[in-house]
Image 1 (cartoon, rainbow, N blue to C red):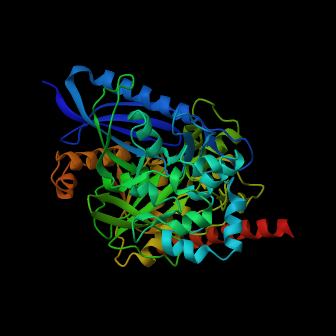
Image 2: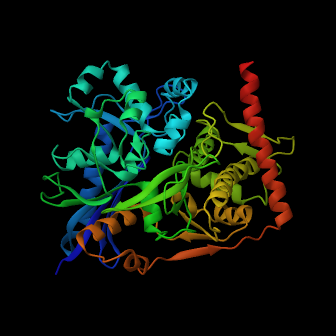
Image 3: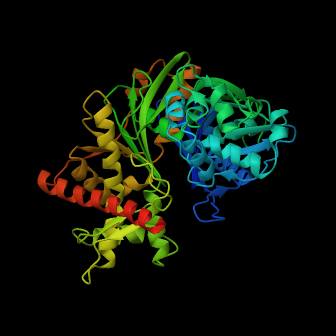
Length: 501
């Protein structure tokens, strides 16, 4: 007899995963397909929309084939890389230009113009977000201007959407142009108080309302599938949610005081709060998830480059093409410390809590005794230092004490990183043993929408294996090392400023 399951798709920056999740929270089948990135200019990052869609079809087909006759999907759930955005024709569904990645800085001049007009306080108050090229609104404007598409956009001939919108459009055969509140809240176009597109923000950023999707709760019956390769027709698309939000939900971080860090290409720290609260510490205010009329908010800090720094250094040093990340991690683990080296991986500027889009990477503390393994270790430690900066900001504004850090994402497989993370924040780190927590979070939301789970309490009770890392570094040494990191960040900013004089 076939088991009831949810087909959960997690479309990320470097790969697309597909999981079949049963009502006990077990993963019955899993498949993954890589996706590429292009770098047409310095600090520009883009992806092929059709490649993203094809990766979903291939991963979904492989997952269903692996499950065979033992499971039957009853719904689809989608978690997605956030802020990445694209345009397509409403009539044909054909993309117009690339998918502009969340990492991309091509709309920097548009952001600077908004800042020069003194609009940052208004935009932050309405959207909860600082002005930064990472967020989707200025990317949409750039795509419209670059291809002279504004008139067509105003006439309703085009669609603009984040990845959840694009996938829902494709899966539904063009029947649904929707996104969920979490993705909408990352665009700088969404009013957090009214939970709707903000007409004044649309005007300021120059984005016509006609191109935007309808905004719906994360757990909702968004659309039904048409036959898409191995994905059958008639499946309800029952959850859409940004991947970082899905990870917090998958970790069962439902209550104030919970804080998770997702370690991927970049990193996101997020903690739930009961109402939208504007940060004074460089954090974003966002919607964590929406279930029916019930909306949970969050404070979040986004770090541009964490795992990507390890990948970059591995390539830069010409390490094994097969596994530069693994080889670099092994080098880092071969030495007891970084020998006083600090690497500020501002390869695309600095995100939270610094928000310096012009900062550039810096290695400092080099001596004749410095070694490659020490540089590798400094790169791993840079991830933990950046996470600490955001963790401290969250602690200052959360209103409750953050007792532990819930960790997930590919880089958490590195025991050295997890132990140093606990050491440098002075709090225990609980590593989620599942590599699929974002997809699981989306599946749980779809299950709530369908009634497969009755409540968040039922989801919190599902098995969730974790490994605990206790802080071992003495407080005095912890603070001395972190002071060195703060000095390195200050030098990176000073280096950038000096270069402009």
